Image (cartoon, rainbow, N blue to C red; front, side, top):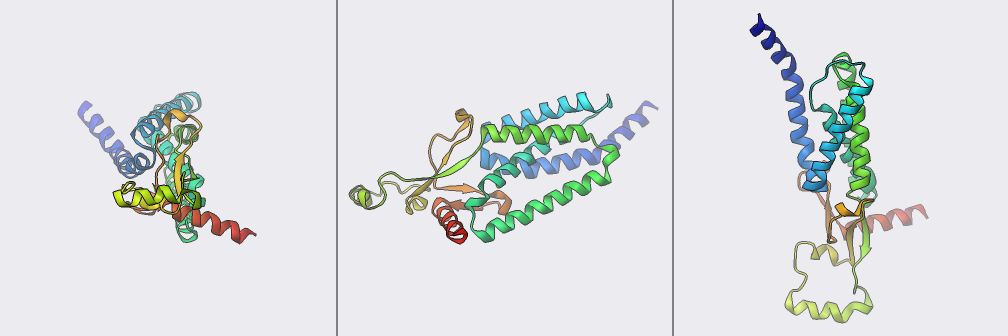
Length: 227
């Protein structure tokens, strides 16, 4: 009897556990790529803690097991990253990102409607709030900044760099337009120490990056269009 009960629990929980594993395998690498390992760990642990607190406080004492609350925190952090930085994308890419976001919301809505009675909704809400809040505090929050020494005043410095190949690293090509990305989160301890020439958008593709030059052009295009 004990064995039958244990087997029934295993098969009952197997599908949710598999779903959680697949979600973590998809969301985890994306968030780690945009936020870095340190921020990813903080957001995951913080989302799990927030989900647990909300479940204990609001779920009516019902038993709950799983990591779905923490996964919704990762999803919220990715959503915030998209929302904050979508203005840096060209119009076509921003539209594709918006479509992908709507599809994700539809899938999440259908998932909750179909399995409402079996889900710990309070944990999911806690995870979303915790992940979103931590992402707002820790970042990343990239802003465009002008590269020192660019423009007419910086031509002697640029001329000296050419023969020696200084600045030939991976981000230098993006800096050719005179712009770089600076990470400026509210909690500066977690900020990237160095500016970068491109930022990732894994939601648009595993290797999709947007250069600072392209982002500056997109921002200028929107500014001109508004006026």
